[in-house]
Image (cartoon, rainbow, N blue to C red; front, side, top):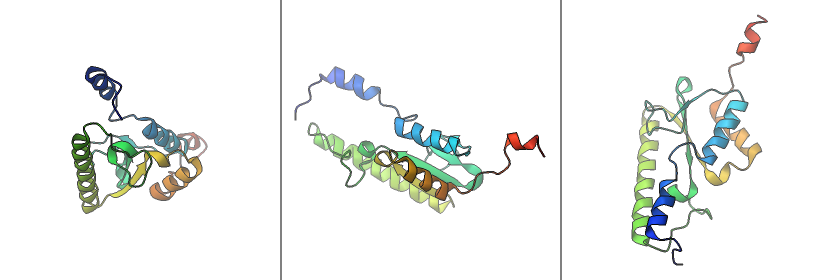
Length: 148
């Protein structure tokens, strides 16, 4: 399938794609916050600079885009027809970096959860996954301190 954009238009389009604060990441963050969890974003002290980190719990979450990280078997994880060699090399580097970051985090004692873009739409399942992974929230909130 030919690219209908000029190289300049394609470059401008690709330049607008963000590394952080993506729609799937925002969905996960809003749900975590609504459930009462507090976390750090893009935390540099955790291996692989995860999207979401819980330093006190030593748990991190990576929210991967299915296209960019090539989610196996996902309909969103296609390889573009144009410049196929470039894209295959790009995706191979991304997968290698993901594997390296995951191994390094686990070797340092971090628990890791990888969420895929295609998984964040199922709100109930996502909520259950996050609760199971992160664990119980802090039962004492700021609002309850006044009553103690």
